Amino acid sequence: MKIKLIYPKWPKLDRQTEFNLPPHGPVCFAATIPGDVEVVFTDEHVEPIDFDDPADLVAISCMLTCQIKRGWEVADQFRARGIPVIFGGIGTMLHAEETMAHADSVFLGETEGRFAGVIEDLRRGRLQKLYDYQWNFPDITLVGPARREILNREKYNYRGLQMVDLIHASRGCRFNCFPCCTPYLGGREFRPRPIDDVVAEIATINNNRLFFVDNSMSQNDQWEKDLFRALIPLKKKWVSHPIKDTDEILDLAAEAGCWYVYQAIFDTSDHIRRRVKRLQERGIGVEGTIILGTDDQDEDYIKRLVDFLLEINLDLAEFTILTPFPQTPIRETLAQEGRILSNDWYRYTGADVVYQPAKMSPEKLQEMFYYAWDTFYGDCSQNLKMAKLFMKVIEKERADNTYRHHNLRRGRWSGGREQVGGE
Image (cartoon, rainbow, N blue to C red):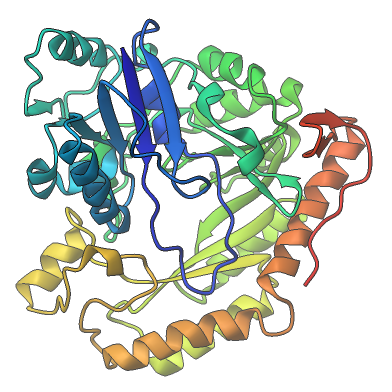
């Protein structure tokens, strides 16, 4: 039996440097497919889909709202050829009802310990229209190493630099942030993987640079400290979402190889200033994630916020427009107030105004989005700021003798000098 696993493309964030990371959802899903099933993977961001390639099942993995409509288009083409299609992934969970019209089957929830049953149903000709395991989470110990061997590794680099490999050490999130759909997708319970399992998986990854895609690393202090201590001997360099702001945890993170973190910046307070400074003092870069268009923001506020980011020497900034994604508290509020202007999912990228802001027009907010990007990167382009962060990680790697240059033409790692960045 052969499964063709497809990750549809989506429109990238306007103004952001374009690069492609190896996707995480598909390789985690592939690990739950029985070993006697052939899996052929296509990431449409880096290679075209071969619609004439024969398969017994097409599995479409969708992560984002702005990706789902392309997923439907792909599914429709394969189904017209008589090939059954199943959808899964967190984007599918947000759009399950709509997706049913484009699929022979929809899988909701996490697939560990469950997808073998789907394969058996397919073999017996009784594929179900819906497999609903949402909020019925499998035992976290069933999460095994992702099947990264299905990736075309040569496609995931930026100007000759090997990009990060994605990994997760936990699922779920105990926080309930207003613009986020994570509680709907992964539940409000923090579900950490056994640390030994995480370390064992990392040891199999032939890449020194990692991205922990956990919703937040700062959900349990003892677990966070234990994880960082376990990472120290591996000498990996990694990126993550926020870590706990205590001296002990920050010091451990730096020793464990933390390269930079994504930090939500929601105001111009001394708290944010201090938090960024404390990370940078330990050699940890900070990429601010900044949502524009909340109800307390007007044009002057956004200008002051950008000035603040420049003042505190933020390493990178990613500006997005508040977007009322399905199954989020903010969507419910805006819908009740009649402020949602568009349900065209292609526009739900975080770069397009799809609702009525409280203190400015949609056109003004769109203008301020471009203002924020252009002003923050006015003196130093995003490409160059990214290059500086990569130079920092190369310095860290050279300091502990883990630096390896990937020769893309020969397809192997070797010692040597790496060409980075540039305008």
